[in-house]
Image (cartoon, rainbow, N blue to C red; front, side, top):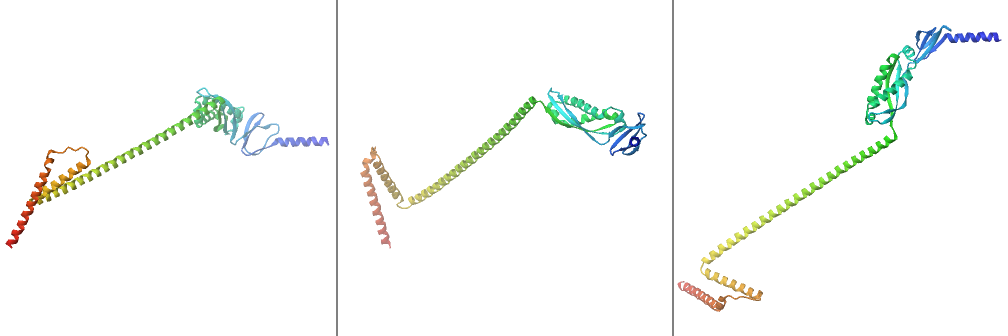
Length: 315
């Protein structure tokens, strides 16, 4: 039984060594006596047992490789921790197998050194704002170095840029100060706008009040002028009528009588209102004045009667 089992196992082992399957999106490097023979594409392949072998199997799909975090120093001497991701693809399985021992480890190391170099060219603020430029420069450097390896650098992305705790505290204080500054500027602008609006309103109010006072003064002046004009017109008309009345028969005597009445009336008012009165010297002849006035009145009456009698005789 043992003699039968061993040959069967040997035959199966030889058959297993004779045939190989390369999966899709992979490539195999075939060697014969340790020398490169061919690159095996996906599919079923025959090998000469104990002579041919598949020395390397390469992944032909795009690969994602993490770049471990590392400490970098910025241009302004700030220590930051940076990590990233590399996207690459094997373009030539032969070069990836024979041109370098381990292209993945080489790519990671090259990405780290290039990243340290690029971070050292920038200040801390620029490392956050210029990530795209850093990624582009790292891609150029790695792609240039990896071309002989048969590897194509697709892209590189920085995942995190983490400053030290002291720097983080300083940045938080700086941002708080910046926010407070913007708030103070906003409040100052609002206060300025408020004061401008208040002064503009007060100015407009003063203008409106002055315009109102001006118009009121003009209206009063026009009213007074109109009143003076009316009084003057009435006075002139009255004087005209008085003049015409004086020219008529008896007009002069009537005027003198009116003046006498007004004189006596005003004099009586003075006596009633004043405690001490200075009497003019002509007041001593007041009796003679009134006597003369009575005589004149009698004469005027007699003349009028005679005129009426003569008029009747003529008729």
